[in-house]
Length: 293
Image (tube, rainbow, N blue to C red; front, side):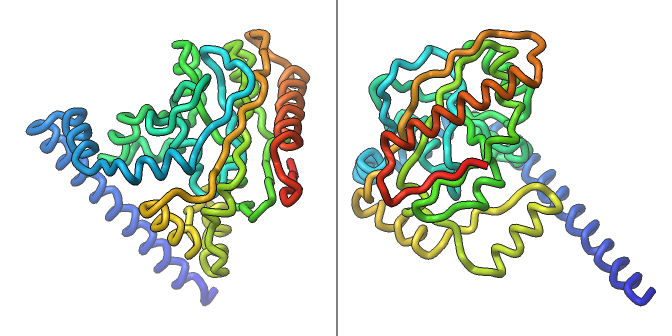
């Protein structure tokens, strides 16, 4: 009974925070509309990028991040990247023209829908070809015969980041495999080695507890970097880091089925998991371990 006043106060504070955030978002949105009226966004983004480009840093990024393609990749495919790591830096770097690789074509990165509702951030995302992770957005992109890159494990996998341990969350995923079947799009598994070690998440217990609370209540977490991550970002501006390699596996061909059964989805998922295990066996050193949940 004595807790009700506290609950009431917290509820009011929560509502006030939501109102403030909505107000800020609205003001930013109006400001962005006014700004784009004066200067169209695409020319403005191009001008900003060209102004702040640093050839030395770009070379350092190219020498650090790369994708290795051994098997031919279909024109359009679903690239399933693992592990998610702290911020999926490799996925972004390898899907921009900055880091080119023979046999690999940069494609649309899939990210959380929330980004699409933040002024300026949403426009920057669209400028770089980033799309929302909702089913319809991915399906629409695939039907245009364009490829997408996604992190199957999502936030849950991000929270399982450890040095030299590839911990994947895949056995309960089904949406992307169903989408591959309904669109007849092949799946290309991609395994990244080295990112977890150079850009780990923070080990501060308070931040971990906060993320656990966020995930339990809202299904999201924040990518809090460790001191080592921040140090390596600074070092990257000075010179290349230890190479971070992303290896593509053989494309998993998919026969289109308008109404796939649970057995179809499970079978395709098992083929994907087996393909990831094969990439790991071929490319990972003895210091690495693989766990797929």
